[in-house]
Image: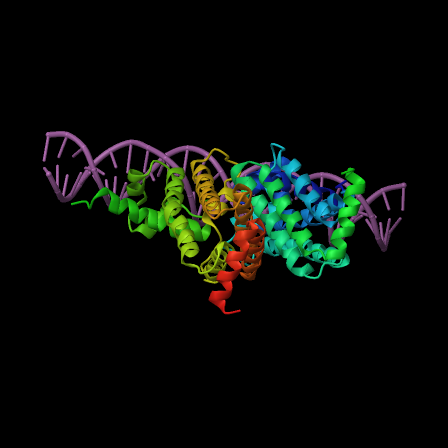
Length: 208
Length: 208
DNA sequence: TTGTGTATATTCACTGGTCAGTATACATAC
DNA sequence: GTATGTATACTGACCAGTGAATATACACAA
């Protein structure tokens, strides 16, 4: 019998993901995760060495899907670079209106475990955000932006700021404000020739 | 005997403040706070109805001093509005280099207690950030900025974003990046006449 | 084909410790 | 002699992690 290891392992991670994201790390017991996954705690400890391991696995499982989602929002948006950047924030605002939305799992975990700087989960979170920042930078470089590195950091700051602020105030409109700021900074960083081309493209599309 | 109520109360809050800020809410027991304050848990429960009350008191005690600090950084900075805004971020970057720095207590608490949206501590945090945003808005209005409300939100987003990002990466240089972005957005929002005046003032001061 | 060993996978029941909150009593001040 | 403040000692619940046993699958030998 015994289904392949990965099945159980992933069922555990799925259960952990829901609970940790919803109630925080220290707010969820290993027993609760096991129960949600439909097995005993002892079985969970067969697949994960410790709770910390489980937390790390929870975030590692969110890494790629999260990045892919941002890239998709960017790719599917119409218009120039500023429009595409803003689209990320608009889509995020839509997500944030779901009742179960509770901010960014990476940032919330890093805030909760701030007293354990070397924790594996924090390293995974830091790597995730670095990947996002690097993707932004490369994208901006390809778009002909000179200070691509600085702009990427600025957009990241606005994004993570909107996670924090919207979580606190429960008001997703801050994400649209962040999107406008991101658009504005991107447009300013665009070289003049590019700006004119983008403006022409915008007029063609929106009929203004 | 028995020194006035407030003394003990404030000794408890001081102890709670250090511990909650350093290790998070759920990571600190009431016993630990009592021990740090040099008294028993039972005494602590004489002064506070519950741990939640104590957490709320911890944040309430940080409200005014925090706002005053930001205002002081702003007031004492030289130059025009963009310079003064940027000064807040530069001072924050300096704070963030202290080894005990662990981000913004309000944001970290709201992240940790995200599953308890009505928690008194979260309401206090939200009110605190609103006060800061309103002070920014009023200041921008006095400075002749048209879209003062929008700019205030944008600066807030950059500020809270830098708290989150610097906490994750332990790299205060993000705060300087946020400061540059804040300066840039402020300068863009400044009316043209103002901008020239600010530029002149800047040249006089920096000798460029 | 059938027996047997071994690694994988799972369970029940438990330990030692921590935690928020309390019952009760004692001390001091006015 | 009552208000306020402090301490000792406790409760009941929870929690991370473990010991010991069991069940299954599969490889290989008789």
